[in-house]
Length: 271
Image 1 (cartoon, rainbow, N blue to C red):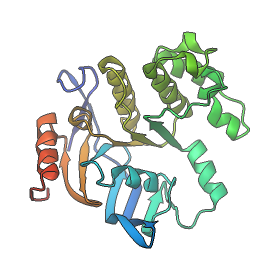
Image 2 (tube, rainbow, N blue to C red; image 1 turned 90 degrees about the vertical axis):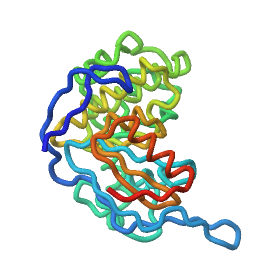
Image 3 (tube, rainbow, N blue to C red; image 1 turned 180 degrees about the horizontal axis):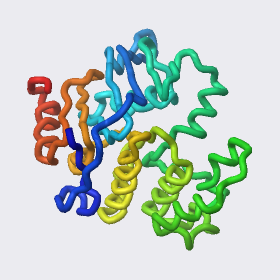
Image 4 (cartoon, rainbow, N blue to C red; image 1 turned 60 degrees about the vertical axis):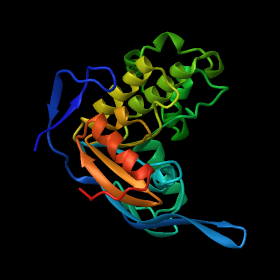
C-alpha cells in the first residue's frame, strides 16, 4: 500500500503529493488502557480499555468530542501520566516497568512534544530553549542542528530573544524547532495548531508530516480540526473514553462527518 501526504498545499486543500513507503514496525502501542481519577468519594472513569498502535512512518490523529478522553490518552501514551490499568509500550519499553529516571531520559532523548501551551522556559532565549534537551542531558548542544532547525522555521534571527517578546506563532515555531533539532523517534502533539493563524499552522503541519515521513519515526496528534486530521495517514476517533472508529487517509469532509456522528450520539459502523 502506498501512503501519501500533502507537503505543499494550504491546510484543507490538495496539490502534488509526495509518496512514501507503508508504515514500519510499531513504535507505540497501548493495550486495554484505563484511566480514572478520584472525585470526592467516587471515581471518574476517563478511559475505558483503549488499545491502539502507531507504526514507524505514520502520522496519526486522535479526535473526539470535548471530554472524550483524547488528551488524557495522549498523556498516558507519552508517559506523562500513569494509566490505572493496562499497558503501554513506547519504543520497546513497557512504561509500567521503567524507572522514573529512565522515563525522564527517554523523554529527553527519543520523545518530542509539541503542545498548544508551547512549554518554553521564559528566562531562556530562543536558542537556549531549542538547546534545552541537550542541557538537561548534560550534553553539548549541536550548534549546526540547532541553527538548521531554527532556519527551517524562519526564527534564526530570534535566537537571542526571550519568549515573552514573541508572538504565539513564533513561540510555537520555537517549540517545534526544539523537536526538529532533537530528532526524536516519536513526537506527541496536543492541538499543535489550535491557537495559530493559517500560515503558521501550515508550517507546523508540514514539519510534523516531514518528521513522520522518516521511516524510523512517528507522530501522534490530538486535534479537533478536520483539516489537520486530513493531513494524517490515519485518524482514530474517541467517544466517552473509548475508541469508536478509525479512517485511513481521509478527506476533511470524511473526518467532519464522523465527528458530527459522534457528537450527536449517532452509531456508526467501525472501519
